Image (cartoon, rainbow, N blue to C red; front, top):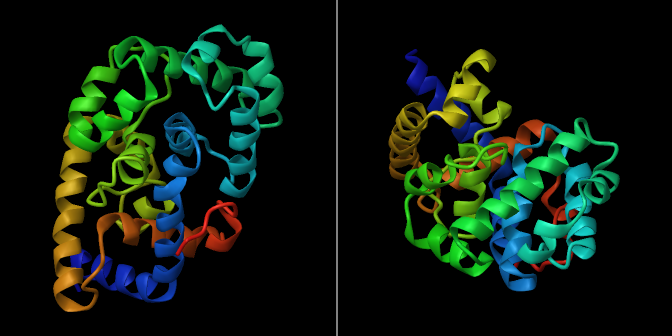
Amino acid sequence: MKERDQVIMDICGIYEKCSTQAKEYLSKAQKLKYYYEPGVAIIYCWFYSIPQRWHKIEPKIFELASMCRQFDLQFMSEVQIGDLSKKLRPFMFYNSLSVQLKNFCKAIKREFHTWELFERTLIEDSIFDIYRRMKAFKAIRLTFKNLSAMKIFVGGDENLLILDKHVAKILRIGQSQLIKYKTNEYWFKKLLDFSSEINRELRAKLFRDITVAKWSLAIWFHESRISAKDLLPMIDSN
């Protein structure tokens, strides 16, 4: 059997089991910007770059949002790194994460001025155009993984995938190669082209409503053993 055919079979099996979870979570995540300020939804996605279990990360995000006035950009430019670090303990490298989070917010303020303008950019511009603009800023912890989450959850673009280690495994991407797909435009574009081809075949064969975002999230739920009902409990998925 060709490797491509095996990838399609693997995704089919996973999607049959976990599509409901993926759709429920996607529905809630795309409503997040309406329940809170756009900055909260965007920072929620920014945390997708953190190598920790998500059920531990998610509550911290909302604790931070409460402390940081819904991630008000002026507040974030003035907040002390130590105050952010206290909230991010006991995550690994919490001091570095605090610096990167503050730097990201400062970059948004400098480049886009407001969260609302960045939200509009996520809706209207390509992921590659946004990535190029943001690459001018250092130590902001932005990759195609968390930027894809922003485009999917805030920008509504479901033709992207959130590339974590579980999705990489199903797509036959080795762990040593993962970083280049997350940070290199050429490789991520090739991956998106391949994912779109896979999605067209899945849609033609079995799943009429499937999107790249949905099956990549289904893989995440299948492999991580997380339940969608435990995430974003404050948001109705209907």
